[in-house]
Image (cartoon, rainbow, N blue to C red):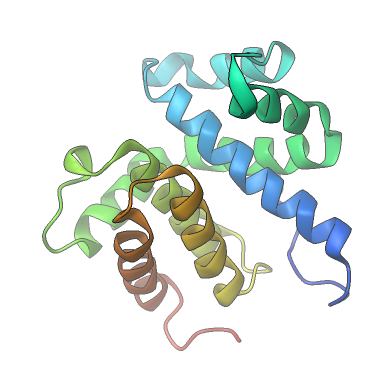
Length: 169
């Protein structure tokens, strides 16, 4: 599935919200999908979109609302689907880029944010590098630990240097 590009009108905050929500949904879905065998993840993702958990509290409700928002869900499906398709490759590049942390020792949220970062940097050239990096930190801040934003920022920058040397704006 093709991921829509990020370029567009600078004042289009509605589209930005859809892209941001799509990334957020993708990360949350990927965290959920880690518990499935690799061969079952795509089917589990489809099931997640059809029957999102409602859960207790604000986050469970927010997830269901985001899934119901079709443009955000489509973007999330494209991102999560791309990560599923390139899972081993993305894990390899993250592992090679991370000097001190093995992938399995990283916090689940951090690991999945970095998978989305690596996918977008390596496979979605229309998404500007600064957007990928800023969104990664935003998601790490929202869902990760107190140390997640700094960790994700540093490793995402290193991934950007590896996957898009010279940057793109």
